[in-house]
Image (cartoon, rainbow, N blue to C red):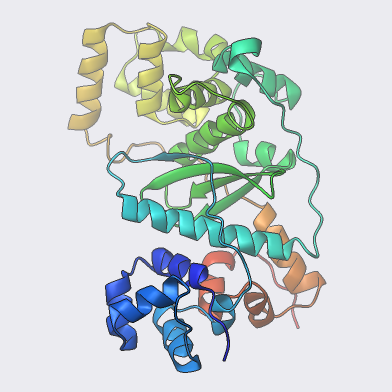
Length: 346
């Protein structure tokens, strides 16, 4: 009898968003029996493991791994309405993605991350931190055309997943590999501000004792907007701001009109009445749901390079690589294979 890992079973349920009761019905056992299996009180025979594998769409090898489940921890940017159940799903997704990544690193070497650390209480404000990072990474003044490339060129891994209501999440794999998860379904402008925001968390908030009175999300946002739109550069253009001017500025800075309007308010470039009027205009024009002005799409590259190295340089088939990370081939294709990965002709 193959021993089922009870912690992994629970993780698989969470990622598939299926309750214990529903899974018990699906595989034809009592919920109490499944509960005892998840708690490690009862063993699961081969037939039950096979039914669980089919119901949750993971290969049997996934459920019999001898691995302690440590849910991923970090900082995240999400909608306030996100339910606890959904957050558990996203955490489970990213925990499994970490396993995939660390498994594939067995054959691949990553460059050392060039990530400065910053203590707001000792070194200065989030705005000063963003300026420091620009200098540290030698980012030219003005607009950052491709923020993803700067981040990945400096050893921070960006993983794009379908994360529903979660925009972004920052963490460290294995304690020393900085990683930003980002929702791949977001508009380009929101994507850029999200990865800038999560980069702020990585630089300012990990490995430090931080008072609960501080608003870490606000700090990360201040860092992100300053990184993308330096105050010294943008301030003159936010005078007498209009909807048309916001659209023009978005086309240049690759930051949403809504974010630029909020920034103009933060910098005191508009009065309260002007801010409210412009915000109402954005709404009446439908721009709070979908803004005009198309900006370039940025795509992470490190994961693609790793997958490509396995499939092309190391001679793995997609079936073999899917088996290595313990997922089905269709799921491997959905998560990791797309047009950006070029396969060598056979």
